[in-house]
Length: 119
Image 1 (tube, one colour):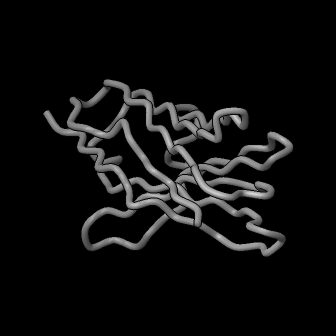
Image 2: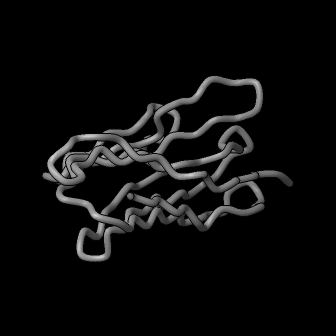
């Protein structure tokens, strides 16, 4: 069984920063890619940032230049550094892992961590 646990969310003021973490545990055979998603109340889920095992990253236009995704495969932990936060960044952020468990490719998703940006 694979578990993903997000942390690092909180309440911040506009312009401040947060660093989210996503820690994976369990019988993981291989990891292909990881992505951060967010969902605000009444809105559809959107991809925020992704990173492949090879290190290729991609970002949603609203967060380009402000957010940075990174990975520490030794710790099975992924990060999302969020700078210059805006009220529109308020959402539940969760991580999604594309991985292999006992030779079977599957996806795993965490429960999420709340980010609230408000003055």
